[in-house]
Image (cartoon, rainbow, N blue to C red; front, side, top):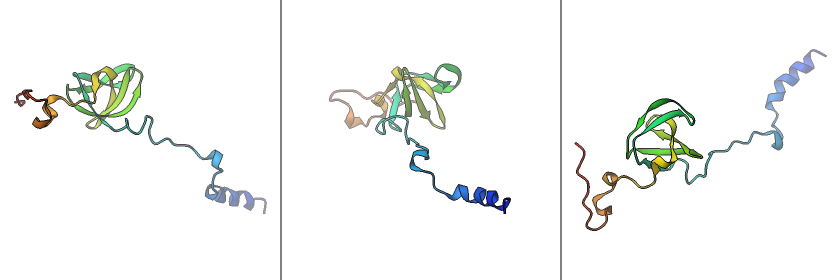
Length: 118
């Protein structure tokens, strides 16, 4: 009997619910929901860094490229660009799309749209 009780307890313990205080709290987003996964654009070509402090670059994000904001941390922002996630400087991001991405009727009156890229 002394050998059976620990085995039964070991099998039943994972099935018992955790007390409310012991349940892990998982935050769905590290930043405000409005900013998370929102569309931003790069204002200049910047390297997509693996780490916020620098280190090896995963590639380069072209000027005017669309990125999704994941997290802002001081002077750096973690963004998703295509299949990569990395860090870029915050001052290289803007919510305003480049002029080429705007529809022609969205330009101010009298403005001339840029020529299409070759």
